[in-house]
Image 1 (tube, one colour):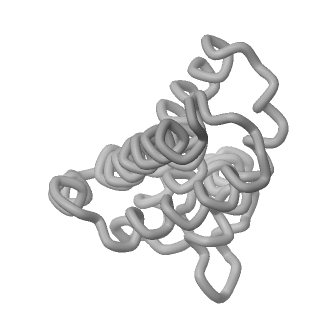
Image 2 (image 1 turned 180 degrees about the horizontal axis):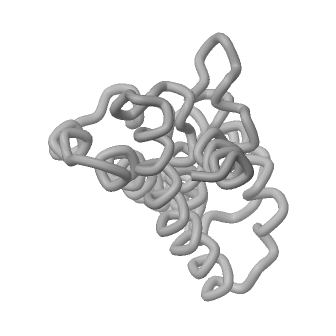
Image 3 (image 1 turned 30 degrees about the vertical axis):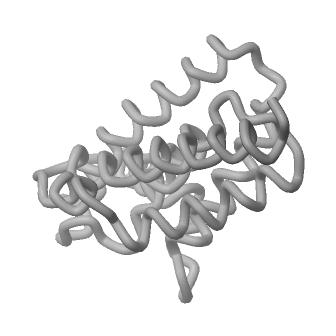
Length: 155
């Protein structure tokens, strides 16, 4: 594989190299997810969903290739899964700072705790094993935020 291709794969998989942050790389990846969210939050729902699907698809490929390059399953520096998961967590959530902060903490909670069946998804091979538990954490987070908005937000 050519050097440029390797660097592109690692750039994507490591969230613009946020995954190389020496402490809590998953949290750094989630911060990149917040930054990307701020860029796309004004898209119509279908456009936002297309970005989520692209992030998940490209992320699955990049994570699988990065595992091979790094020689380690779900290496901590691979954070594209946190980015894609956070974007999904914020789907159809009003773009307020309160919602973004709540989304960050709830997503990190589910990403770290990995309640059933997320831990089982993590055991899959390749990019799917890297991505699916965080996609699940994003879905769980979105449900919590939607329910919270319904009861707390008075919708």
